[in-house]
Image 1 (tube, rainbow over the protein chains, first blue to last red):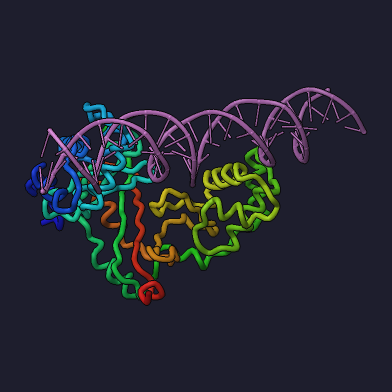
Image 2 (image 1 turned 30 degrees about the vertical axis):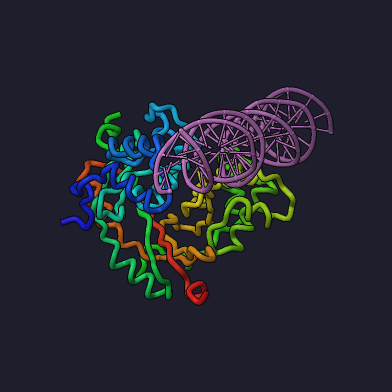
Amino acid sequence: MPRHDHHHHKPRLLSELAARLRGDAKRFTGPRKAVLEVLAAHPHPMTIKDVHAETKSGCDLATVYRALHLLEEMRLVKRFDFGDGVARFELLAEGDDGHHHHLICTGCSSVIEIEECFTEALEKKIADQNGFKTVTHKLEFFGVCPDCQKV
Amino acid sequence: MPRHDHHHHKPRLLSELAARLRGDAKRFTGPRKAVLEVLAAHPHPMTIKDVHAETKSGCDLATVYRALHLLEEMRLVKRFDFGDGVARFELLAEGDDGHHHHLICTGCSSVIEIEECFTEALEKKIADQNGFKTVTHKLEFFGVCPDCQKV
DNA sequence: CTAAACAACGCAAATGATTCGCATTTGAGT
DNA sequence: ACTCAAATGCGAATCATTTGCGTTGTTTAG
């Protein structure tokens, strides 16, 4: 059983967002709702540009940036970095800490989620050996997908 | 025995760079020499800005960018990405493919090299399961170093 | 030895992602 | 509905990186 099968968690409800926002003196606004809905409709990490493009409501790009930062602080979304200089965000399901990895095709940029994370033991070992605390890691795989191998 | 103990390889000589450049109709110039010397004097990945700053010869920042891209293509240096939006480069020793990882302090940004890479088997498994070829990975660890724990 | 041919450089301007300032709008509670 | 702080939209600023181009310095053909 994978450590984080977040795809089987119940997706967060917009009403939950509303409640958590109010509890923090924040507001449940159109753009924030729109951003969350766009993320909920996509299973893979999205760039801010893409989120903005799918947000038909015509809200400002800067607003999407601000909304995603807020959602990240609230741990409703998680930021991923595929090393191409563009941040990507993924919606977190309830109870998911978002710790997982991806296999990214260097040809067509398609993305596969990797649920397994065998890195726990190594993480602890590396922390202990170097006297570090609260060690985490970022890990992504890159390769050529079946389709791109044909070309 | 670690898979890549590149610190025990003989460092590349400037004359080797000169030879490889000439063989490729490229030129062995002051800035390229300076960049390589700066990298050789530092054991950890350096940002382009830092390389530029240590290059006393006063060469242009754009030239440092170009020199590092060239050295990367020639596989004399390797690019690392610590997820902060700034590229970092490390000199490769002879015979080193540069595949290793880092443990980075989130407090003071100090860097420790991690020679071990236990990820080979997983890499193959993930490649096979998804039909991908030529799979590689990027892995970096983040935590709080002993010094920064005191504060 | 000289000149054409070309690689690199320096400088400045362009790009792309992200952030910020600020006037205006709007959600949430009274 | 009224009020007020939080959010938005818009434009301008910032930061890393790239590019265009005129100039300089080598290399090579004659």
